[in-house]
Length: 106
Image 1: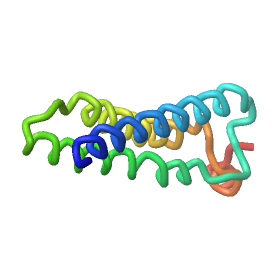
Image 2 (image 1 turned 180 degrees about the vertical axis):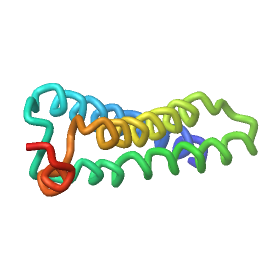
Image 3 (image 1 turned 60 degrees about the vertical axis):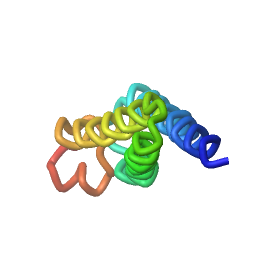
C-alpha cells in the first residue's frame, strides 16, 4: 500500500503541475495587454505543493530503495513553475492590473 501511494502522489503532482504550466502559458500567450485581473502568483498554490510532494516522496522512495524518477520530475515541474512565475513578473509579461499601473505600464 505504501509503495502505491509513493508512486501515485508524484504522478498526480506531475499531472497537476503540467496542467497548471500549460494553462498559465496559454493564458500568457493569449493575453496581449500584459496585465490581468487575477494575481498570477496564485499559481504558487499549485507549484509549491507539487515541489513539496516531489521532495517528500523522493526522500521516502530513496529510503526504501525505490525509483525516484517521478519524484524528480515533480521537483522539476514545481521548480520550473515557480521560476516561470518569477520570469513573468520580472519581465513585466503578465502582471496583476494594480501592479501594472504602479509600474507605469499604461
